[in-house]
Amino acid sequence: MLTVALPKGRIAEQTLEKFEKAFGEKFIFEDRKLILKKAGFTFLNVRNQDVPTYVMYGAADLGVVGLDVLEEKEYDLIKLLDLQLGQCKVAIGLKAGEELDWTKSQIKVATKHEKIAKKYFEQKAMAVEVIKLYGSIELAPLVGLSDCIVDIVETGTTMKQNGLEVGPTIMESSVYLISNKNSFYSKKDTILDLREKIEATL
Ligand code: PRP
Image 1 (tube, rainbow, N blue to C red):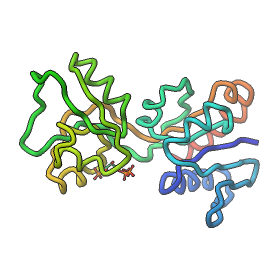
Image 2 (image 1 turned 30 degrees about the vertical axis):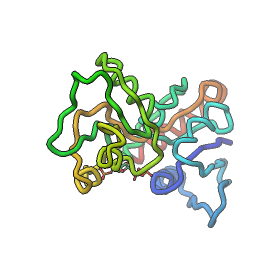
Image 3 (image 1 turned 90 degrees about the vertical axis):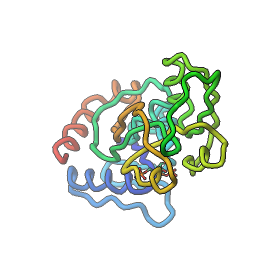
């Protein structure tokens, strides 16, 4: 029996399609249910940012999550397989035509990705004030809340439509199957077999 934490929404559906291909069973969450038990699996439907938490604490053996979310949590988890879903990058966003002023004594950055942003600017020896937001990040520079943003860019459309330009890339991300160390060592054969079956569907 393996417990797998999935991030609510499209990625969960796409992952379950891969499990369907790999194991020949249909996996569908009923209406508002958060747990789906079938064919030796327990799937948990959780918020994207909570996936590493369920896996880290051992409430789930495995999880499915973007590298950006994983990087933000800084947990010591095992990356088993790139599921080749949700490809995007974490990048700087600036008002169109503007550049980052590296001579400023401090840069204000609005983001959901606090740790990634902090690390990036610190590596450049730039003092940064990170302003944590939970969504609509693109708005911040437009109304003077911040000098720039650090956000997910998939197609670039959201930034463009809001008068922002995509600046330097901080990291590339895609969705990975992850495991905690405890589960990995105690259920190694089952987990490696699963990884192989899922990999064959890619
Ligand atoms: C992300 C991100 C941008 C958008 C970028 O939000 O915060 O707003 O996608 O995509 P684009 O480059 O294709 O326009 P998401 O849809 O993940 O929603 P969230 O803000 O609720 O996490």
